Image (cartoon, rainbow, N blue to C red; front, side):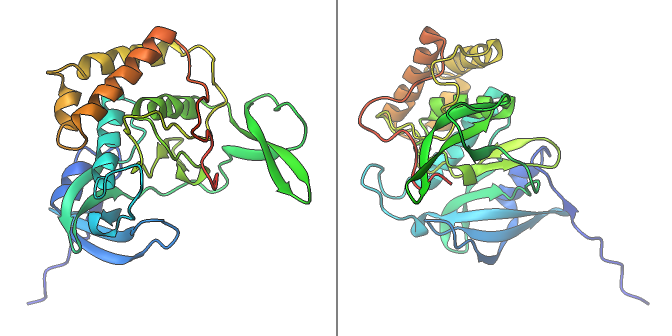
Length: 277
């Protein structure tokens, strides 16, 4: 008698409702290390109940200490960013869970394949952006030359700029933007978020001071409700970040609703992360 034919696991995408369960409960196998990451980031596969996916696993034990964030909290902040993204309904952060793994507890996030050639950022000559682009600022490009840094005037980026303002993202770099062949856009690397102090650093300043869209205001109203003392988002964030950080998140949402505009750079904190990509 011949051996039964092996049925290959079914691949799971970010839109699949089973993605979070797969990440949380599946068998995690380390395949390699992502060397560009500042903290330990491992490329893995995860399999469960006939499903399979590639993912990134960042163990807490591999987190580099930071002066302005408590040790061992970056993985929880990544999961908290996913929770807020899901509450917006925009789906801007890949499915992300906190789980045990080969090197202890850590963040596990679905791997996103990016579309080749998608252009969201550029350095251009001149002092004003072309139509379809928003100016960020001038950057040195060597030999005493400067160029204008611009990002696409893209609805997906604008939504991400609102999310970053809510979660107080201190490190929105170009390499953290993942456009897909299906026309979706994801943001990754949210370990330095939710600080109670204002630390917003981003390349997405192109809408600074402009009115928020009607869609964004509706989403922020929903977040305000979800962040009440008994709200669903408060409950989701409570195991992941501190009470003071949840209160600060609520205050940022209230401020955005009160001003009705995208935030502007301010204070002593650098407005653009370094390196920017």
